[in-house]
Length: 115
Image 1 (spheres, rainbow, N blue to C red):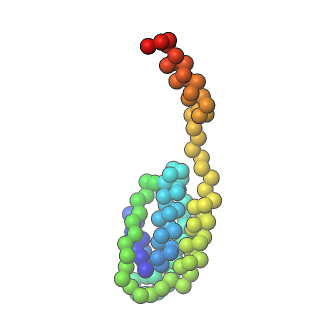
Image 2: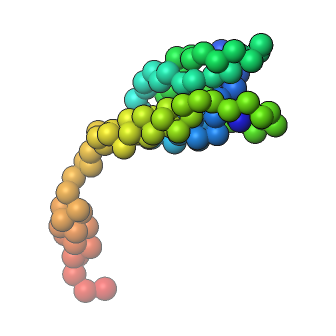
Image 3: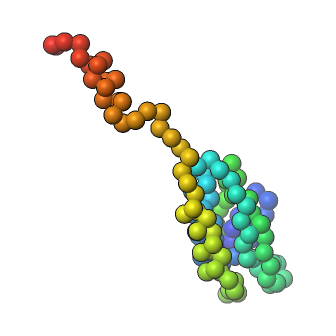
């Protein structure tokens, strides 16, 4: 079990789910995007439920190991779903110019005659 720590609360969830949330958070942050994921959690009284967590670059999260034995029933399923969302992200970052353009600009600037 791991604790997923956000600005609005701490949630006890399965190892696979917590790791997948971190991976997805990183992918979203790199793309400057955000999303909401629903994860299975164990409440303070031991009851199983779920929580929706907003992920994005401006929303820091942390994961801490929790030395507890209760297991999340659908930990692997939740992790697979979150990882699928991370893999489905299509990069939106673009380059300002093509790599071939760089050589032409620098070659012209450097070609000022013999040194």
